Length: 342
Image (cartoon, rainbow, N blue to C red):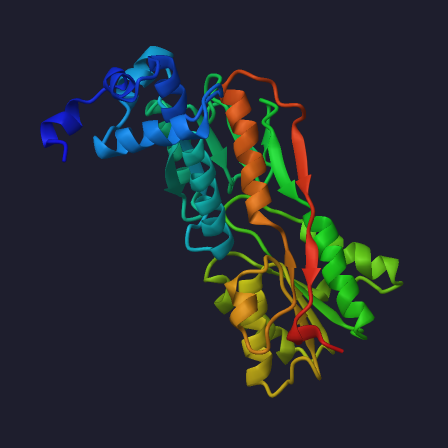
C-alpha cells in the first residue's frame, strides 16, 4: 500500500517509469487524448495512477496553457426541473472534457444575472453557457472575447452569440392541434415569462394551430403568469379567476408542466373531470406531468441533446474554432398521457 507521502508526490514521470511506457503515452491516457496505445496499456496506467492517488496538477497546466479549465453556467431557476436537468447534463459532459462547472442561479433576477457575468469573467472562466432571463445581452455585460453560448433562449446581442433552441413554436402547435383533434372547441392558453425575458414562441404556436384549423383567436383565452409565485400556484389562481368569468373551456394548454399541474388541481377542485370534461396538455415532460393524476400529456424537448449541443459549441469556441453555424434547433415531440385521452 503506497504511503501518503508517495500519493502526494507521484508524477507522470513516476507512472511512466513504473509502467514502462513513455511520458507522452501516460499524459495522453490521463488526459483522455489521442490514441496510439492499447486498451491493456491504458488500464495499466490508470491502475497505477489510481493506486498512487494521482491527481493532475491543474494549476500548473492552467498557467502553462493560459486556461482555467472552468466554465460558468447561468440558470434562471435551479429548482425548476428542466433547468436542473440541463445543469446535470452540462456538468457531466464538461467533466468528460476535463472542465469544472460553476453553476450560478439567478433566481430570475436581472441584476443578479448581470453580476454573474462579471463575476465569472473576473474568475477567469474559459467560457459561459447561459439560459438568460434578459431580453438583451449588452456589451457592458459580456466584455472582451469571452466565449458565450445561449441555450433555450435567444436574447438580443451585438456579438453574434451562438444559440441552441428547442422548436418551441412547433411543439406548441402540436399540443394545440392534439387538443383540437380530441374535440376541444374552447382552448385556454397559459403562458409565462420571468425576469425581463419575454418568450412568445409558444403562444405563436398555439395561435398557428387555431388558425390552421379555422378557429377564432380570442385574446381572452390567452393568460400569462408573471413569475410572482411558483408556476403551479400562479397558474391555479389564473385558472380559478378565469372560470369565474363563465367562459366555456374544454381544453387547456399550459406552456410548462408545473402550470399544467396547477390548472389540473384547480379544475378538479371545481368538480370538472379530466379528461372527460376538459383535457390538458403541458410542456417540458417534467416530473409534474409524470406524477400527476391523471398523468399529463406534454411536449418533450430533450434537455440532453440541448445540453450536449451547447457544450460542443462552447468547446469549439474555447479552442478558437469557429462554429459551423450560429443557430441550432432541437426538435420537440408530443407525449400523450391520460389527461387528453379521447
